[in-house]
Image (cartoon, rainbow, N blue to C red; front, side, top):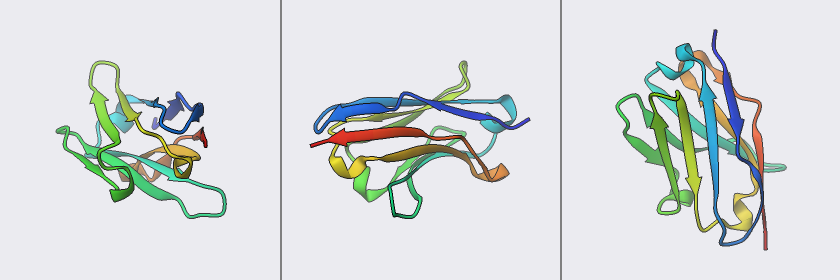
Length: 113
């Protein structure tokens, strides 16, 4: 069974930080790549960050230097530490397992100016 469940979203002021977590089922976690995407109102869903099974991260230019993706093998989670948040980061953030084309339900992040 493939499952992804996000948590950690909320409301934060510009310049603040949030940490998102994605709890993955064993089948989902043991794939080559897991990723975070986001979708702002009226915009297309976009890749934020991804991480390989070996722990190699990749980031969208818009978040480089501010966001950090990581994976915890013991807990089967991937996390997204978001620092120096901007109003443009406001979106629903989704955890994604590309191998299964599976999406979590999403968690709302709102950054106020």
